[in-house]
Length: 205
Image 1 (tube, one colour):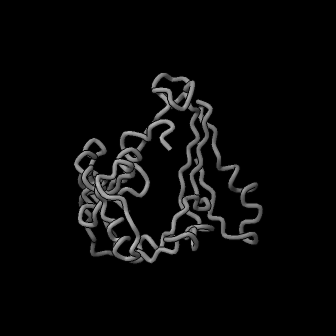
Image 2: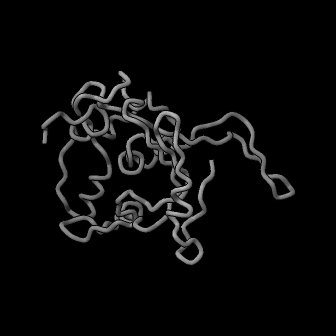
Image 3: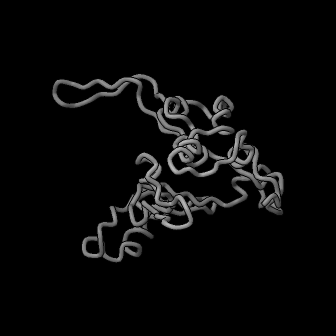
């Protein structure tokens, strides 16, 4: 499978979508499609505010900002027919059907040993060790405490219960309260447990 070059601009990569983007979308045997390459960032987040000492522009009724708008990111995008993901192999009859809920996670691993050679090259060896794990978006960034982020990244999703205390009482709201004087819900945060673990009840909102 080939990936298209970066979308540099209309002079270097004219008609990018027609000439380079769409030809890199490949059909899968089961009716799905896959694309690997650079795409405009689609995730709306006040990125600078989250990571730059809580310098949030989006706290309050105005001032919201999409920090990543217009930036290209390396993307692997997979479109899969619904029936390929459900427990019964069929399209669910309704959003509340038992097989209408799916979950997924992804990991990144590296070799446990890296040796820098005298000729300027490097060699990697040893078993693969997990260095990053993505479950729900931004759990590691905004829920897990700073001193446990590496441990969370290295852990299996089967061990998520170990980190449950930080979901019911996360640190970030406390930091926001201290920095901006805003009111926060008291723990335990059952709403976050519903969002991240057991699901939001039907017609609850």
